[in-house]
Image: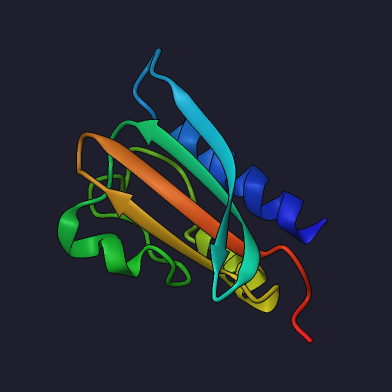
Length: 115
């Protein structure tokens, strides 16, 4: 249920911050890291993007990008919560973004529970 919450948050954000009539992609794949299987989920959109100097801050609680303040609603808690959930499951989440272009959030989770 908690991973479902992460996916719902990423998809909701992709819709909220997308340009009108643009595509949103959700890609699931697998990879091997350190001889262990991992599940990878990437959510991408075309839209307002995140200013380069702010990308590292998007997972901070209550942080909102300077380019969306006052124009797009939100509280700044969703991505912080998503990061916490992913890390509690032994995974990681990261983001790449170009302001006014593509933003991709990538979640990596171990496919098995570590021994």
